[in-house]
Length: 283
Image (tube, rainbow, N blue to C red; front, top):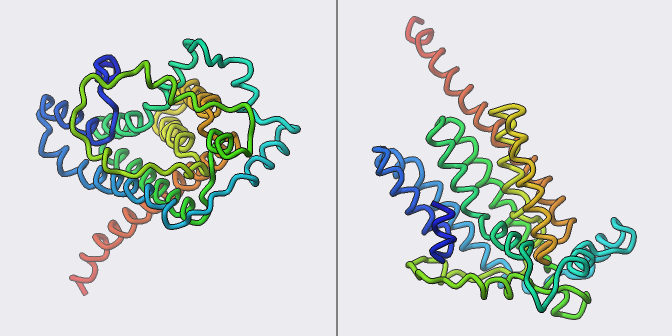
């Protein structure tokens, strides 16, 4: 379904993708269950993305220098985005790498929703854990964007803080015309250009990797090459620094652990209440 959307030129917005999953749930005869389980999750997630667009309006001063200095300190004076684009990008000729990185970047929402749908089909308790973790992660990211709005490499180039960075997405997207312009509420959302730290593009696939390893042990590591591809793509495209990825990984680890802890304790508390009821009735 995702491949068909890309082939038909349908922009992969979360609300459009949710309706495709709704259609699939209808085919599987699980329409009511999908609406009951998924719509609160999707509503809260869309609300996060809506609020994310206002973060830069509430805190207009973007941070440029700190992340650049950290990157140079970590990589011995080198900015990885600048080096990658110098070696692999040509303004006159887009390569397979440019298209692959662009598609990978825009699978951001489809990946998370598709994985949530897989867990929902496989085991609902897993779905609840993942939904809790990704919502906590997303809203924690939003709070961080309010406190510390950080500019990505392409914006640093635009404002004169860096040299040698091209916003490849703008060029590549010309080759991906939206042939079927289906309705989406995302046209009314404000984009947030200074939501770089932590990188949700880095955090979401790493969070999925953690859940895959938790549920399926070593087989979950089969997803690792895709995670590395996403990390490479967002740095190469000039959308994030490596430091942003590290921030995303830390956030993902934190809220993966927190979600499991919270849900485990909620279950334990509920179980204790049921255990105590018979004893209290006897006394």
